Image 1: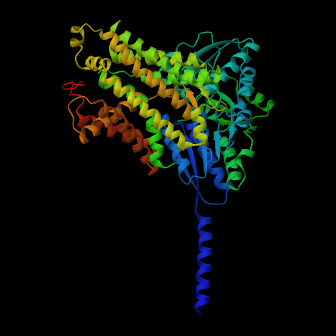
Image 2 (image 1 turned 30 degrees about the vertical axis):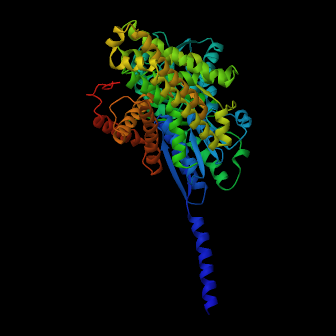
Image 3 (image 1 turned 90 degrees about the horizontal axis):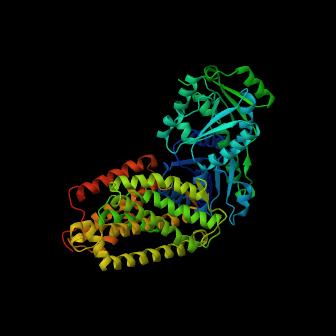
Length: 320
Length: 295
């Protein structure tokens, strides 16, 4: 009798241990370099998709470094040392630091400008990336094709790393279309107001890239664009929702969701080093109907062009 | 590596900047925020030379330090030659350094992804050896500056902060001494920037944000704590520089502990700021003369 009881207890212990191990949530550490709406939306997209895609319990630890590199290092160090199973680095500085500091845990970066060739050159390939830059050239092309008779445009930008390389592309494409470019660069948000007053009288439109700092002060540019009936063309949905006329791009949640699909594969046991950089392909045209009207653009022409380029159209009103 | 060892690594890596700020803030008694810019300058020069120009990493490190020191001398000349207030001169220099750093790097961010340096190699392959190397570097730096402050030059630098009139009566040039002091200070900041760029894997135009304040915080906390443990009215280079080590360590330990216990990083700057206010208030820096009672 005693033997049966002992056997029962041992079996019970084994089964409980297995169930407990299975129920223990998997921790995913997400490091975000600065507070920004677009980055938050990426993180939301990541979380929503992963919960859907991965059956086991997940604990998300999202930490924002507030633009402080010492703090960012401490956050990544913590993820590297504790029970975190997978690290998600949002945007380039977080990716660069995580890939230098973490060698034994898988890293998935979102919108971090890490290319497949760069990944292959690394001795330890514990990282892969979801790229969001493939909408830049189509976005500029759509802008030039949609706003009629362009001779001079203004681009307002910061000196952020991704932005400077995209600026070169913009200028090159403008030159090919024989469009003169007025280049206005700001270093701090406080400069945006005075910089926007420098927009040339003969400028026919203002273009902005997916520029985090400019996006935080977008209302300044929207006011000027509406007052002067000057089209303000952006490169992401959130800025259009705020009051820019239109943009070709990806949904931020989509970038996060693609990262989540990779995360699910990694958590199921796939080696991250075998997963190549993911390029998004489904582009959207974001339109703000009221802004289009205020900034003297033709809505029908924009929608017709979107159909021509086969972009799914997302329509916004002005945010209250 | 556990929390204490990784904090030690982080704080010792930051030590050159803390010593740099100690020199300007405590020894020379001038408010110099230029380190925010020279920290980035060191990282930018090092990254550009190693990544783009394929220059030897040790040579690049020396050039980065010299670049920082030259900026320090220029700030001193702005203060003494053109008679610009020390705080304003440093803010102006940080403003100008933004453009200079940008021009040096040609773009706002240079990554070391494909360019391995010795610190990066150690971080990837043997982090304990990296810690040992950083401890060795910190000890060497402390020995150099303990010796410097005990020398005649050190005495003159200290007298700049305590009694400039005495310097003038001795026929010594305050401009020269300020240039030397700020040269050391900003050279150390550039050195710290170059090391940080290697450990973090990139040099970025905005990586200097808040560095001066963090280092001042470390100096204040360290001096206060060491002063409480070993009260001493006379200048003691060993105690003061030990204060720099302790202050840096406490700062990073507090930050890492808060993150480990799960405090939202959004509140971290507020908490660390309040801790700093406490130390500044109890140290009574605002009322006390920066110099020492006697030599």
